[in-house]
Length: 179
Image (cartoon, rainbow, N blue to C red; front, side, top):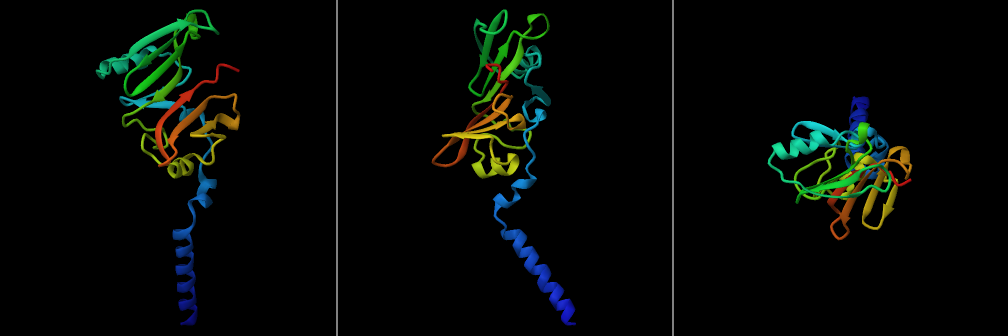
């Protein structure tokens, strides 16, 4: 009888330990940033960096979201760099695809209910980001920066935080083409 009571007490202690464990202790389970994390989910499709931009731009048009376009001569490639903006998103493109077609270089979420592949969006809190992604590669004032393979010269996912509430104001993915 005493052994059943002892096992029950041990079970309760183990359960309590799990319930009160600090979230930081769970960080080991957060996977590092991977290529599939660097994509926008929109209209049932996944739109990744460094892929042709034309289909994503058509999807926004078909969804009734007007994107304004600005362009400038590219410093790195033949053709024009372009930015397509709305109140909710900014899509940056570079003319580096096959035959100079525009490819997605930047996806910035400014508002709306868009979520990352790990469920983080506008209004998420810092603790949720760290539980989903682990510790960032770099923290720069109000930015939590995650890089592929923890290399600062690789593609990145950046969360912009409101420092007073530690909530996400915006986030963006970008190819690091400047290195």
